[in-house]
Amino acid sequence: MLQSGVMQVLSRAALRRSLLLALLVITMAGCGNPLAGIPPTPSVDPLASGVSNNHQHGEGGPGGRLMTKYGGPLTSTIVAQPEKPEPLKPALITYRLNDATGDPVTADKLAITHEKPMHLIVVSSDLNHFAHLHPAHQAEGRYTVDATLPEEGQYLLFNEFFTADGTMQIERNELATSGAPAEDKAAALTPDLDIPHEVNGLSIVLAPNVQKVRRRAPVTFTLTASKGGQPITDLEPYLGAPCHVVIISADTKQFAHTHGDIPGGAMSHDMSSTNMAGMVMPTPPARFGPSLQFTHTFMQAGMYRVWVQFGYGGEVITTAHNVQVLK
Image 1 (cartoon, helix red, strand yellow):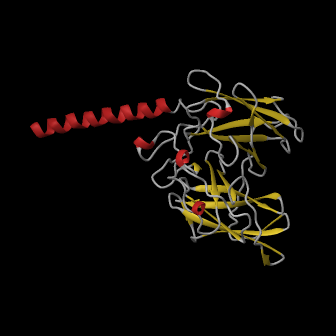
Image 2 (tube, helix red, strand yellow):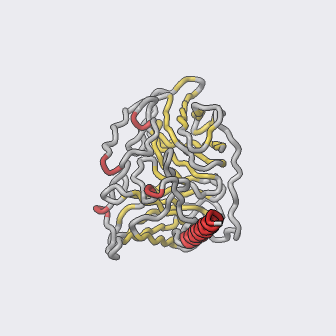
Image 3 (cartoon, helix red, strand yellow):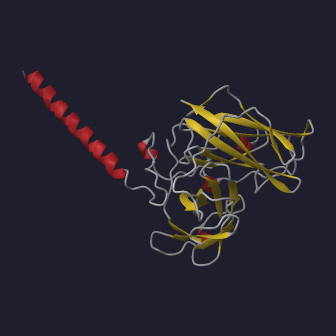
């Protein structure tokens, strides 16, 4: 009888703990970035739930975040002029940053990463349109940039910046053009790794080092560029790196901005544990090729679009590839 009574007490205690945990999860779900409309970020390790200083921005590496964390220590508001831009006409995008005391965050309070204080990625909801822009500080914590949206529809704006001490912050906002339909046009992605892509007269292939890409396992991708069947050996850096890489999930909830290097270079490895605050970026070679490498860990299964940007002939080449990530 005594053993039975103890078991009943333990069962009631376990039930109370479960109910408290469920209440905590429900309460936290209302605390996300109101502009992003995304639930708060779960973490494998509760001690690692704060803002990360990863060089691989967005999703973390093994043992890191399960979802991209949006928001951070600074208050960010965004205004578009006009509020609903017309397709093919420039719109002024303004971010206003304030610290915890309400003071404006001026340029000296942000870290310059890859030559810019902000990296703004603009994509259409179907992930067919991509732009990499750089808002510049004007005055009193205002950062502005002109953006031209190519057609009617819904767009996602991912703005990434770092405080002077190296704390990363990513903002996710939505912007609709005039005449945009009420519902987003969802991305319909088909895996196309190892298939040549023709971009600006170049033939580009992106290949992983595994047969199947799986979540929570680092994957090294190799991009190879050729022209007329001949390898290209005079690729050029872009914004202080051999290449920039942006990764967004088909549902647009997951975001990462990382960088690549020549094969075997410092930035070709998984950079998810590198602290931006104390990192000295290696100087990229002036010319390289025909291959680039980067490593990334996908924390969620699903379809992703991967954009790689590098220089060639004085221009920025942007190539997009679709990756299927399995459990």
